[in-house]
Each structure stands twice: as C-alpha cells, then as structure tokens.
Length: 242
Image (tube, rainbow, N blue to C red; front, top):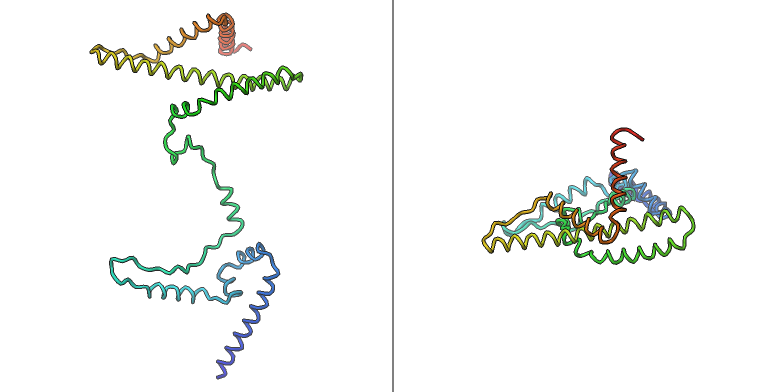
C-alpha cells in the first residue's frame, strides 16, 4: 500500500512539474520552443513536457505492428497510419531552400534532349524584337551627349546587331544544307552518283557569297581594310612586337 501511495505522489508531483513547464512554454515563441526541443532532443523533450516514454512507445508500436496480420498471404500487410511527423528545424528548412538549384531546361537531361533546330525555329520571332530594340537604342544614342553613356549604348547596339547577323547566317546555312540534301536525293533517284560536299567546300562557298554581298553593298574595301589590320595585329602579337 505504501509503494502504491508513493507512486501516486510521484506521479502527481511530476504532473505538477509538467504543468509548470507547459505554463512556461505557453509564454515562449514558436522559434524558442523549437530551439529548446533541438537542444534537449526529441526524447527528453517528450518525456519532460508530454510525459511520453519513447522506449515504451516504441515497444507498443512494435507490438501494434506485430498485431497486424494478413488474412491471406497474397494480400499486402496492413500498417498503421499513426506515424510521428519527422522534426525539421528552422535552420534545416532555410538550408533546404538555399540548396535549391535553378535548372536550364536546354541543358538538363531530365527535360529531354536539346534540339537546336527546333529552338531556333520556335524563337525566330526574337530577331524582330531585337531589331525594334536596336532602333530604340539608336534613337536614344542620338539624344545622348555623355561619352560614357554613348559608349555603353554603342556596345549594346553592336551586341544585338551581331546576334541578329548570326541568326541570319544560321538560317541561311540550314537552307543550304536542305538544298544539298534535296540535290543528293534527286541524284540517287536518277541513278547518278551524288556529290557530298566537304566542310572545306562549304566554307569556300560561304566566303564567295559573303564577298559578293559586300561587293554589292559597297562595303568590300572597308571589310578588307579591317581584315588587314586584324591580321597585322595578330602577326605583331606572334612576333612579340607591341
């Protein structure tokens, strides 16, 4: 009888202590409670505040798991849905957010293979947008008097112009390749031996086309002078002359 009365007194005392701890916790913020739980550990926190013995809880859970029996060996085993939610601290949540990496779908294997042709065709309209931006920047350049601002505007305009020129060259090259394929198919159908052009032949044809366009536009001399200066600078660099 004495042991039972002492046990009841201990349990009453421990319950009073838990009530006082709960009263203190009610005055604390959520972050402070989380930090306290992190410092004490989930086991001590549950025992001190909630009055839960983890060892007993684990034993009861294991016994509950064992009590789930299959009516048929071919059926899946039933499991309890009463599982403890894993504890995630605020620091871990912040770390998980910072660990997120941005992906570029063009180069991500999970998003499929990057098809240059489809990409260029789908975004062909960007050339028109760039042309409009070039016109706006040129208008702004005419109105700007500051030398630094003028240089930055000229650089931006040149970048957009170069981008559009590269896009035009790419589409022209694709048209040439398509024409070559049609010529090869036509030769095969006629029973003739098709001619497969090498990279050197394609490059020579591109240079001839470029030469003819510069000649027609009257920019040939300017282009040759620019090319001469570039080659001279390269030669001086190789010879070690400043």
